[in-house]
Image (cartoon, one colour):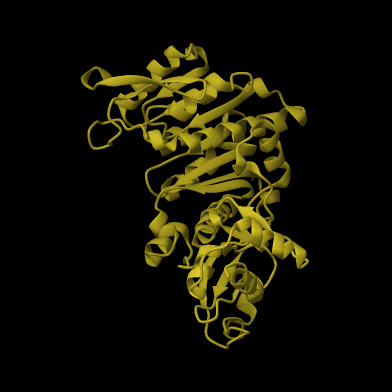
Length: 388
């Protein structure tokens, strides 16, 4: 019970939250991550953007339902109920810890949001599967924010979400997704990672790949609308289309990433193309070394321009600045280290790329990287010239 632990009331966004006095998870049976505030701020913007786009399409925003399936002390769900009350009429908060649920209930009362909040103390998959039958009872938004991998919860989440609903997923097993433990990644995400300078993007594509492959198995599909990386957090958002008519939509979005660890060449290939000529496709076209293969994973777009623009209209957070869809960014710090030079300003590199006729944007997956269709050799020349 919460009476057995010391609590404090903090303000996050526009919401008062009752949380344990100590942030360390080992101290209490309920854990609140104060360092996750930025990730929650971003999610509030995304949920508002989603509901606004629903309203524009003719659906009533106030009738939308939101499910925080591993809610902990309820920080994200209570913020939705309090700050987005005009958009979400029902907010479901569930956690296997009775202490966490009690703290969430106290936060709901603090914000006068008790009538909009429906709390439960169940195992998360059991909670979600109560919604798998009648599609009208499913949730408009399902949020999965576990410790570690979301893999055990994806199947249940896909069964619990409405057609054209929004699924948001967190992953904190960064080392696994970035290639430190490839066999673990293969078990949990159904694909091999690569330890490259763009490993954050590989990790994100493995997450979307898991979501897509599970969705296809359940006669559904996904459409990524946004993703970002912050500290140890991977965060992915996608629309889910439910029904056999949509189950083949993701087939061409699953493929492989090939990387040459000798010269740095990289390539993205759809699964059918790669498998038709596996032996020749895995040979580097520049230095003829055998490239390492990552995947299968998502090789399609990892954002929706319309969705990101809507988020930018709602919020001034720089994370919603425009980003191109060119896959596999270049990390300027990594390039500079390899060239044994100082790292120039990203803005200067982007300006030089544009003057050379290339597109160039930053990426929300890595603060020291750029996205461009320019060849690695050209980026290296620009970095070398600007670092003199």
